[in-house]
Image (tube, rainbow, N blue to C red; front, side):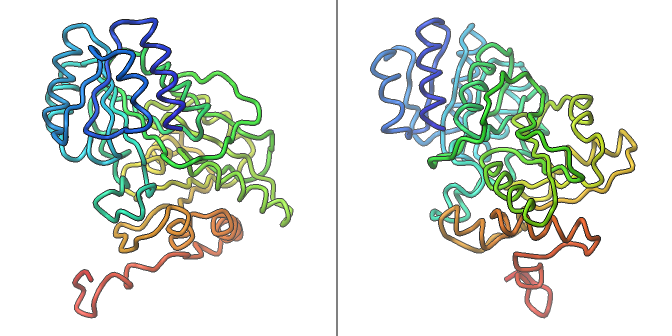
Length: 327
């Protein structure tokens, strides 16, 4: 997925001299071609994200299209004030690329998890928020980011994510994508690299006689409400699955849409717990936290049967002592 982004950026930089790339001292092995070909438009800003965002804003206000590239949470958490007051307030043409969203950097521990990023970026004025599911979506979103004016957030994976689009179609800003032609009673809605697990879960559900339509949401903000609701025709359960906490991410966005549309349809979510005290590979953490395909299928069946959730990750009590304090 990183290579897909870099290839498109490289291609577009050849066509448009306004395209710049700033990095927070990483991207080695993938950014070198850009740095070598366009040395005057590439800057390693070092581990100084606030400064990087300020410089990016200045360049953007001088007519450049500026991409800032860093590990998932660092171009968000460490420079949120600069994003809000510099980038967003001035509607600057800055594109924030967060590599390794969700639990991609699971072996690096909590400091490297980007599990609240979608909520934070959704709250930023004028920010487009995206999370491509595979390299095909990543390439198209990069092209859209270059042509769309103003702030733009891209949450990328960093592992060799599988391709989920059997028949690639052109993405349009805000539109969801239906990845299968099923017309079953359940809609599985997800975003980012987790979509591949959700597709596998839909296949598992078939063995139980359950047809599920799978919606990829490459755009978490904005979302085309009308188009999204069209995909729900005939559904009795909308299940949102996300590698993000429950607060403010895709699940919250879908809940808002359903509430405003006043639809009589059941809604449920599978998400990360608020606290994650585990370290491991992304695959291992998904299994522990109930975001792997088999756990998703199991919990979807429970929701359909009105049995409530079938917890696959430790409850809140696992993180608290008897006196209520956090472990």
